[in-house]
Image (cartoon, rainbow, N blue to C red):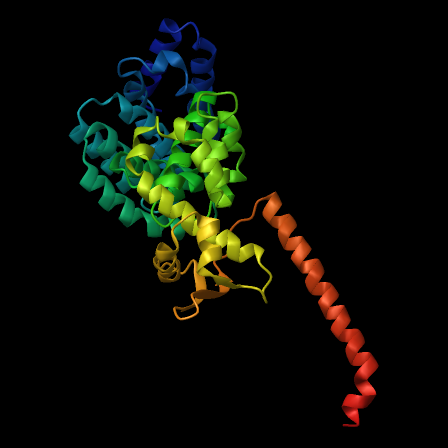
Length: 379
């Protein structure tokens, strides 16, 4: 047993009344070489408020943990070092500290990923190194995809990535990574203010993100419930309007969303997006045999002049939102397919009704074949 470690524990027992029993327990586990129990207790100790001051966590690592770190679970070691490194003010020194830890855990892929995420956080929030953070995210993403199972490590990575994309103003990338972060995180772990923040920024990213036409996953997520009763509750209604291509509701909510600077500055793009979604919804709701629509019908649905309909349909075709062809002579559009999306309850009800019609049509055809079988076979 290291005399340095034992002296540190003795000093902590005498100086910290709040954690006196905990330090005594740590000493007992340490003397008995119960490394697993020692590690579990350390993971609780590092969260105590008294150790968040000055460089207390660094002292804990250097005087105690470093003595037996080669016997610890690698992921737990990175967790402890990740908490301690926050007390190093100099970004370069902090990066060097974590890089040294990474060499000690290189045999465990999950621990390596966790080290790189800690490095990314230092570069992004302490070092203001956006370019370095971007490269790190690009390098680590394949490593995350290769991990055997989804764990909190995925959540940490997606939290870092979403933080970078948020700072960079990359709405579509933020939308995807923030949703993945929430998919790896229990909502109970987030404070109410954090929930509202994620809901707000996710809603904005969905509306402003280029190529984001599928709002169903976000609308089905309980995170949006955190906006109920707040000044941003209108965002949920606006998302629902976009999801169904409801231009009338968008216009009704204009006084609210125009107060948001990003939305007001991009209102032309928003108008184009909801027009495309209206075309998709129009296609989705029509029976498969009744998807040949006139320019006038599309114009009425999207509230656009007829001369702009052809360009709208061309954009939808180019982005693979729908498939079909345009008849410029007859001024019609024949749409045969619409991009699959996560459906809300109303859209599911529409799908059920169409499936019921399809089933009845199949039964009618079956009865027709039964009745006419003799004539068909003897023809």
